[in-house]
Length: 118
Image (spheres, one colour):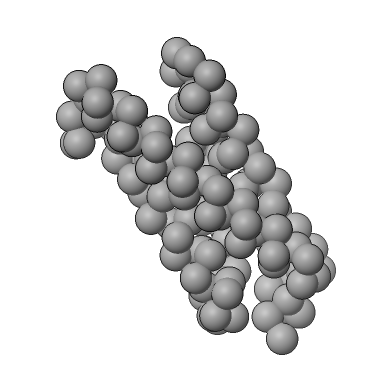
């Protein structure tokens, strides 16, 4: 059973999946907003959001499929979500940036029990 293998309860796994999917959407929307404002695709923040969206999708799939790599993807999501939240909060120009920061922090909180429980 995956929940036992990665150190969390089934509810924790479900929360991490849901938060991953929500953060993926927020990161994709954030990328689109930045590009629409003229940010280059190769820009640092756009690349960060692209990495986050892709990792969120991979994490959700790994958890859903009970992959042996799920603990690693959750760990990377925890780390990257904290970076995204910080960047979104510091660069907050509008309500959408705060929404992105909130969703990234929710992802970090949702993945944390999978990483730091016994």
